[in-house]
Image (cartoon, rainbow, N blue to C red):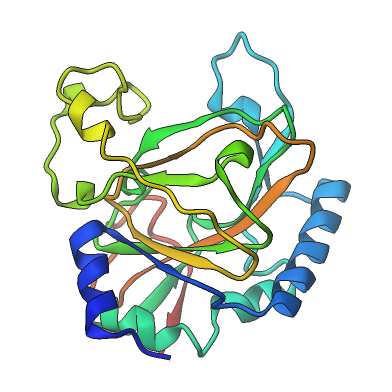
Amino acid sequence: MELSNQQISQFKENGFLLIKAFASKDLCNNILQKAKLHLEKKILPLEYENDYLEAKDKNTTIRRLRQVYNREDIFKEWMTSNKIRPILKQLLDDVAVLSLAHHNSIMTKMPKESSITPWHQDRRYWNYENDNLISIWLALDDEYLDNGLLQFIPKSHKIDFIKEQFDKNSNFLDEHILNYELLKTKVSFNLHKGDIVLFHSRTLHKANKNNTLNPKISFVYTVKAQSNKAIKGTRSDFKEVVLS
């Protein structure tokens, strides 16, 4: 599959792109079944809500399954799908390389126990020569505002912010005077099983807590151009998979 010129322009202009019904429902169900098993058995490595909260808060709810590439064949098959490779090459203008350093995860928003994911840019996780990385978010079931749907700030990937617009954890400050008008432009769109969203590492995004009675479980991984090298000695200087 390849993107139309209009889709490429949309991604470049807004910093994100929705593609409906990209993955089959059978694939999503199989991934979801395996993910729930790993969550139930608490198979390491894991990340907890408590890792993102202040020390006084105690919340041991699982936030993500980390390093999922080698957990299950079905996870690996999705991340290396031949269907998406031409799309990633179009957007990166280069062969895509799958980073296994961080965004290689099954993400959760557990009922009532999940926290808000504040506005942020994923660039904070990476140490490459440039910030031209793309995350691929797969909805394994329906996602909407009340269960923690992703929200985006269009065109924010083009803005050079100053450090005062972020807190010490690189979260974009809702109350900062320079941020107020920009945050009014936020957008979201309900996702259904099999939908994917591609978004740039500089695109501001957030997700509310899950206020429903059912878990929301999603799959995310990140790619970069083959020519975009990791900075030596950083955590991005890690294993990679070339999607040639």
